[in-house]
Image 1 (cartoon, rainbow, N blue to C red):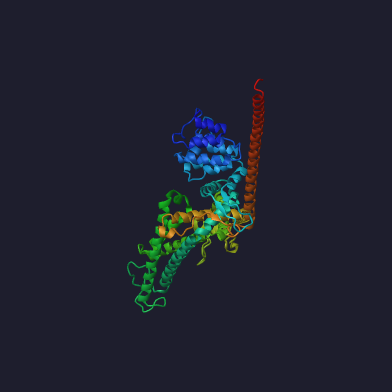
Image 2: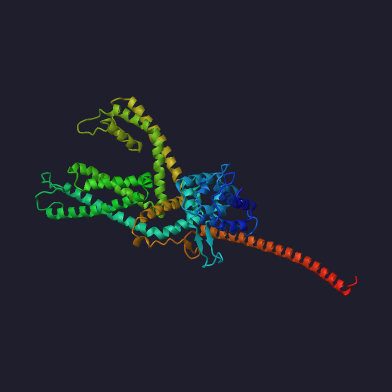
Length: 555
């Protein structure tokens, strides 16, 4: 066993600190059990009150010698333990925080997630308790300052989002960090929202202006090439002259193209920073589709007015849906947006199993009611596609039973219609309603967690965009993680009380350690004093013997 390993194993941290400070010490050497010095550092127990400080210093010395931090998560000994798993198993929260205090790659992160999933929930919470530091002011003082440790909190937030324990986001440390980051970057978000609202306003104005003018003009018009709005030779169309209408159309289109180019630039920045994360998000695909449809419909590439109407309809729909999702990132609206997403996914998931039942009734209605055309009366089930659309409308409660020709195929049509009303309109619709109520109730119970989760994704999104912006813009982002909990309203009162309780418990623990240290020092002092007293008595005895010998030289 190497000397530094044996020293760490014996718990002699003072000597270990001295050895690690030596220039010739190799911190990457392994023993015969394939363990590094970090393995022993993660498992050694604290015997003395000042061992915690020595452990921190030893870890810093190891890192200063070029030790790869990922070894904490990747290097396994003969028993298949890593330093990280050892510290988690033994419940050393402070050492776990030290190992998490850096940016961690994806391979190591998968292992961290696996280890923390197997740990107790109380231990994970204790890790968060050590992810901040406070000054020595009283917990109720306005001068109290709390400093959040950045990377351990970032890594714990990533773990929380990927684990079933999303309620950990309500921990006062994580909640304070999320709210603090939101306070610093929210202005960038609102600027982004304002930009998109301007883009959507010009898109909507251009499309509505085009359609309004197309409706008002005569069919005998002279089309002008490369322009989406046609006009005739009359002096006035849509309440304005041809020249003015053409100028307004071109102005709206030019402004829209400039805004579209800026929107494309924003998306390119996101792809440049993290293209894999960009591809995984469905909302980004919606934005790309909006860009394609807007460019195709408003650039003059398509000459057909009918084709442009289809593109206009999709552009308006995609644009406003994107605005709903964008506003749903605001903490105030995040719960409602999450409810909408949850209920929609629940409906789609359950309807996937019942789509064949709806299709069966749609085909049956087509066979039964397709021959109900009398004069100019509209045929509701003219073909299978129209029949499917009508059946979906009937599923929502729009029966219009009085217009159905039951006399064409009596009895059979009545029986199938009654079965449809029972199984689809009553049973299935009420089943989906109950699922929606359950989802919304569940979302209401975890509203705080949903809001924090939405805010985390929003903060990450803002930082991704800001990472490629010029420095003269991003320099105004305050990256400080220190705040005054009694002055700044970063967290709610319940979380503030929890944070103060954690601070008090940590201080009491440190106080007990200091008292224990004082007791140990006093015991050591008493032992040394007792030894000195014994030595003094022996010296006095020796002096008495010498004095007696000098007084009686003959003896």
